[in-house]
Image (cartoon, rainbow, N blue to C red; front, side):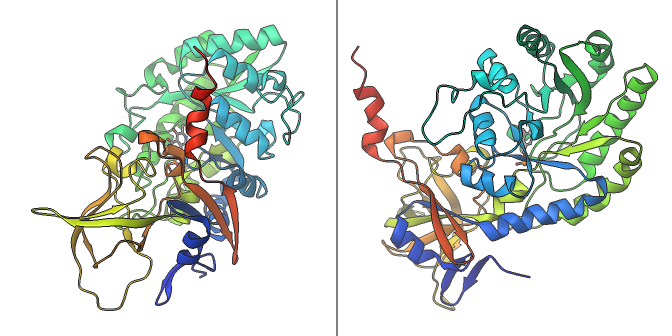
Length: 440
Ligand SMILES: Cc1ncc(COP(=O)(O)O)c(C=O)c1O
């Protein structure tokens, strides 16, 4: 098996490139993605679910860089978007709008218009370098999160003379057994329509002419370690589909969402093949009977394909702790601060048999939650050393901020020994310029 991200005796290599050389060329903090591993992850998931021929809509919230989206679009991915911004990224990546699903609980009128008709895209006033969005057509499916949203989309579609399609997101009240902030399928979460009200929703709105309610959507949370919650929710959805069919409302699409976990180093997470082996038998007879399956994977495609490189600035020893202070922190990778998420962190070059002692790897931000790991065994490191934060490809750069006025990191795509800058590093002048341009 090709190792796209490899810790060798000579240092860390990412898709054939030396991590230290990349950091020297592009600076730090730096996100580096392996194109080879992204492609391999996509193929692996598609193969595991191949008997269902699902439309794999990449959840670009995981990592929305246009060039990563284009790489996946070239592999025939669809896209799952949750905002007007993500919608434009999906379109600019070259994915046909018919392969885009639009989720999210708070779609605004402007976002809905742009999703229905390219004339309302912010790119409709020509933007140099961007194609013309006029005539691009509506998204394939809206994922409906509330009655108010359904009525709003239907009314705008009618005004525009467009017929759009939608899946109703049901909240199956299934526990995804993940962090409470990333659990989305329990009754107390804001997402979807309570399962007990779904039939009534179809009875009221199932025949709306400008917004055809053709499917169901479920997304339980993320990351999910085993197929058990999916199986539970899929069974609930299939039984609802049967009841709806009996009531004269045939359902042709089931979107089973995303959330497939990856191993951040602690183990205990099922592989794509194990997820597929559990779910395919449950769904295959329905697919044979005409049901179309959509999936919305994000993390499992890009999570382990991204490495965050950070340069050590200082090392200090407190009364009870060693602090390794780097140039990346919660503003660069929020997951440890937000969810207590675990990422493997270590120097890109380590001498063999080096003794380790506990340390916190922290950033420059003025918050005590500004850490990448805590009390982690680490070898001795010195200012100037390079650290790698592994499995940072999903919800890394996409959640990065400029808090404390730190510009955002650069992003590089490594592909079979070639490095391409896919987003330049932000700069301080650029951060402040919009305010300078105001004259209150
Ligand atoms: C509706 C929806 N679909 C898909 C995803 C993607 O999840 P993941 O990246 O874990 O696959 C999310 C993540 O939050 C989501 O909210």
